[in-house]
Length: 153
Image 1 (tube, rainbow, N blue to C red):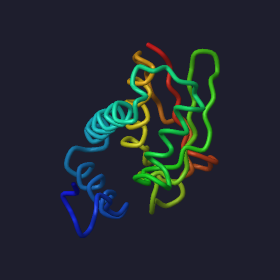
Image 2 (image 1 turned 45 degrees about the horizontal axis):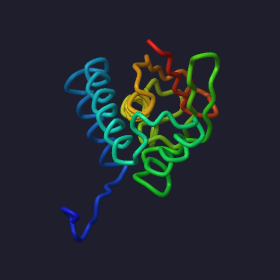
Image 3 (image 1 turned 90 degrees about the vertical axis):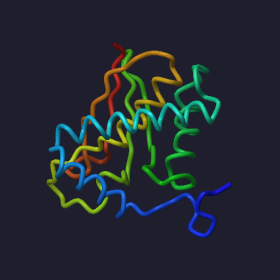
């Protein structure tokens, strides 16, 4: 049952970006980053649980397909997951059209904290282990994607 029978569960990226900017203005960039990464991790862990991926250790392709279904065009539209691969024990996930980058000017220093956190939380819940996550490439700074790298801890 929807809590919003007329409007549904979704809201605009514009409104969510206003929340991000307001919290950054209140807490500063570093304080807001901690809040948004943690919030994203909670959401990601919930998504992993709700989709049946939690502790299932699926293939990377299966996990990405499921997460893109939830976060991508046919889901909440947080971001599109366009590629994933491993390099040694590191997992690299490339995204595009992240909500964090929406409306940002080229050259912006904005990081995709909430999006990073959501994928990070899902990954940890799916794989059953802890990772260190980092936003390592950005479309705002000339990259072809927003890239998140996860290294086991």
